[in-house]
Length: 320
Ligand SMILES: [Zn+2]
Ligand SMILES: [Zn+2]
Ligand SMILES: [Zn+2]
Ligand SMILES: [Zn+2]
Image (cartoon, helix red, strand yellow):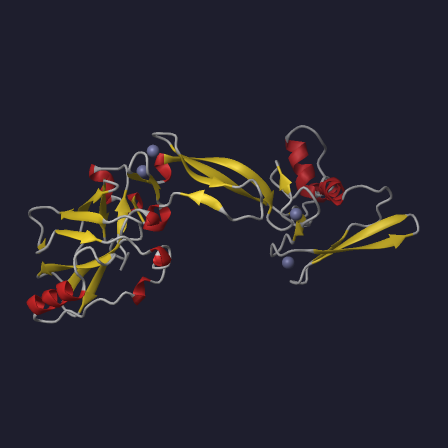
């Protein structure tokens, strides 16, 4: 099981599991040489665009004509029919919902047509009444309970891409290209710097498994509370750099990394490990844990030194 990482909160804050993060939720600031959570970073919206047609906008809805179903939020198909004194528009959803605008006499953008129709709904009229800008609609005076239920097509919402900077040193951690369709960006995520840590159980033994996805060799040292009911016979080890072709690939497929099945003879197993993985040659390491406990939380502090030097605390969070 992957452990969670803490950032910028200490003491009693750590008892709240919300202050522990998955590695994938964190950034890494190379200038500060530390993990950064959302509290330590600041997003700045770079570009907003319609989630469907990807047209760029500064508003909150599609600037063109992408409408969603008010019932299921699915994309609506739009068709038009020419009539003798104008045009009418039909909105159809695959859920079965449909809507017709009635005859529109003057050419105008669909978004304006829908906005004007919106003003005739009981909901809008009620709102206008309470804001002192209109009179009570008839349906409401007669106590029609359907008030507010005659829905109209809604414009597709926008999505945004944000650049992110470190609040402490103001370095950019994520930079998007202004181009909407491009996913290329520079991104300083913790996964590229900070080792992945797993607490694994095999039969009656526990091990911590470390995987280094960075380009740097690391000297690692684990520290833990002195009165803990668990013990690490080995607290200092090296993690080799991830090989160029494996960078980013171990991520998400870590189950492929074999853990040695620990059995009763741990000494022999430990020798096996040191034989199969000379220190620093591999980008992963398996660290045995000695304990009588069957279930426990391991808060540990990990200090990394080498090209980059930083520390972090991590812990397995019990499933709630
Ligand atoms: Zn933080
Ligand atoms: Zn759109
Ligand atoms: Zn629908
Ligand atoms: Zn920084």
